Every structure is written in C-alpha cells, then in structure tokens.
Length: 215
Image 1: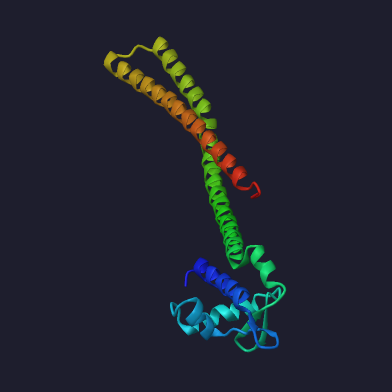
Image 2: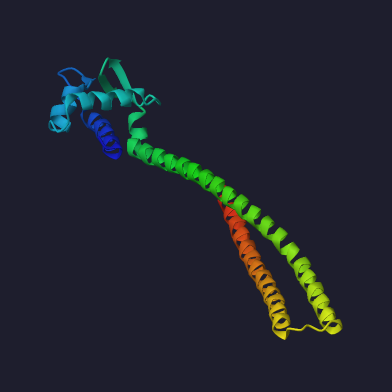
C-alpha cells in the first residue's frame, strides 16, 4: 500500500472509532472495542484484505503517544488522546513530516556527494593550473635564449661572408619561425592559464555554495 494511502486509512480507522465507540444498553452506555472485521466490513467495505487491516491496526498500537487503548490483542478503542491526535493532523501529518525529513536527508547526502565531486574537480584544475604556470615560467627564458641566438647569427653574418646567400636566408628563416612558434606558445599558454583560473574560481564558488547549511 502506498504510504500516503496507508496514513489516510489509519486516520479513517481513528475517526470511525470515535464516531461509533459508544454502545447504549438498557441501563448504561458502553465503550465499544473494534477489531479487524469491524473495519473490514463497515469501514473499508471489504476493499482491503484482513492482513492489511491487521498491519494498520498494529502500527496504530505501536505508534506511541497512547492514541488508542489496546485491551486485547488486535482489538482497539479510542481514548482521551485519539481526538487530539487527529486534531494535530493525525497519521497524514506524520506522513508529510517523515517525507520532508527523508527529503532533507537525501538533499544532505546528495549535497555532500556533490561537494566531494567539486573538490576532486577543483584539485584536478589546480594541478593543471600549477603545471601550466611551470610551463609559462619557462617561456620568457626560452624567448630570451632565442633572442641571444638571433644576435649571435646577426653578429656572425656581419663578420663572415657566406658564399651561399640561400643557405644564410634559410637559416635566418628557421630562426624567425622558431621565434614565432615560441611567441605563439606563450600566447596559447597564457590563454589556457586564464581559462584555468576561471574554472578554478567557478569550482570554488560552487563548493562554497554547496557547503552552506540547509535551512
């Protein structure tokens, strides 16, 4: 049986008992006891099996707060707390309270799981960022070395006469291409560093939001 339907049926049992608990005799008025068969025939019109009704009654007895009397086995009758319990919302109210509590627990578990995932992602991003910082650190040094190499070539070209100008031109073009490639590498690494910084920042913001306590 669906949980909400079960709660509604248990409230129906309590209401039925309150409406039918007094039995008049010739000389007095007695409080009636109710069993599974009473609810099976008169309340639920044989909609539920007796086993299901037995379980509903047992849960009412075991609920606590003394909301019914249980003078004999599965027999129950209302007491002074039955009406108050219904006025407070009855089993349906308990169903909603329990559902909300379970939802909050699930949200907490999912939130903790998401935080762990974000922290792992953040660690990966930070490691990538650190690696990129190391790469970028060497770029100015490499470019400086290229500058020195070009200066040496220029100095050599001014002191020595090359018999084949084509060889000299090809050598200089290779140096220029290398310099261009290094500048492009520096540009790409700086752009990647910027993107990584953005990703790290977003990951840290998500973690801080997920770590905020639930209301």
